[in-house]
Every structure is written in C-alpha cells, then in structure tokens.
Image (cartoon, rainbow, N blue to C red; front, side, top):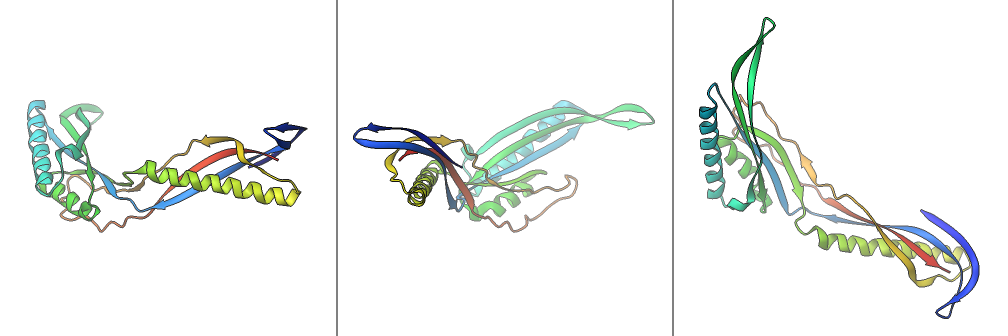
Amino acid sequence: MTYFQRSIPHFSSGKHIQGKMILGGTGRKSVIPDQAMINIGIMTENEHVENAQKENSALSNQVIESLEKIGILKNDIQTLSYTIQPIYDFVEGQSIFRAYQIKHIFEVTVHDLNKVATVYETSVAAGANMSGGVRFEVSNVAFYYQEALQLAMKDATDKALKLGQQIGVKIILPPAKITEEPTLISPREVALSYPTDIPLQAAPPIQRSTLEIQAKITVIFHY
C-alpha cells in the first residue's frame, strides 16, 4: 500500500515539507510453539440422569488424577463445557427416549511438548472417550509481536527511503504518523478424533510446526 500526496510547500520545525507518502509495513516472526492445548472429554449415557452424572464424575476425576500423576498441574486442567442432553431413538416414526447423555470437555495445557502424546494416552487410558484435537501456541506472544512490529517499521522505512531516491526527494525522519493495524495470531491446530465406542490405546505421533506472528502498520512520511 503506497499513497503519494502533494501539498503546498511549507516549513515545519525547520524542515521544508513538499508532500507526504502513506506506506504499509509488514513484519513477520517465525516462532516454535512452546505449549500445547489438548481438548479431551468424557461422555456417559444412562437412562437415569443421576447415574449418568455419577459415572461421568467418577471418570472425570479419574482422568484428572491420572494427569496429575504425570506432572500436569490442576490449574492446567480447565472445564470447557459440561452438558446434559436427553437422547431419543426414532422407531417407526416415533421418538422413544433412550438415555441421558452427559459430556464433560476439558482443556489441558501442556508446557512440556514432549508430553503431548503421553497426556493423550494417559487421558484415554483413564476413561476419556472424546477428543477435540491439539492446538500449539506460544506462551509469550507479546514479546515476539514486539519484534514483528519493529520489523514492520523497518519495512515501511526502507520502502520510503527507496521510493524517495527514485522520485528524487528527501524523506523526513522520523515519520509523521504510525498506525498499528489489527492482526490475528492463529495457533496451529491438529485434529484428533475417534469413535467413542472404539477404545484407543495410543495417540499417533504429532509433529509441531512453526507459528508466524505478524504485525502490520500504516506509516505517513513527509518529504
């Protein structure tokens, strides 16, 4: 993005300003993720809602205790959702109540990425029968974003100086205005799912890839 605008020559702080150019700057920083978020869950069904709740609670506590034994802190195991839903079967056009279904979904934060597969396998062995996948993230996003922001400023400044040389004008530094543009930092996600009626003893090997943290700015330079 580049815009040029001519203006009536005037003096500002002893500098002769002829016009301005508006440039976009982009900075990118590739970072290796240092933590993973694993979604796991327990689903139980029973025709009596109290029994379904008891079964789910027992399995949930069993999963939590198993994760704590391999070094996962209790604060790193958070409930994402807890739902109770009646399930019906349709037979010959009629809706027949079958059972109450309870789903308890957890999000587990794993700080040691070498434990991702172990956490998954431990959860399944302890009774987890639902999985929403693995999400790789960077814990200190702000630090790397600041580095990307500096690269974005360098990008815009380099463009301005090169354009100034091409059109034969002297770019005035520092720039007159810098506007930070909103950006979205998307984590890397790996989907993991399997039928709840088929036991899974081991998770597949999961390879993490780098994340790209991007910063964008719009800069106004005078010349």
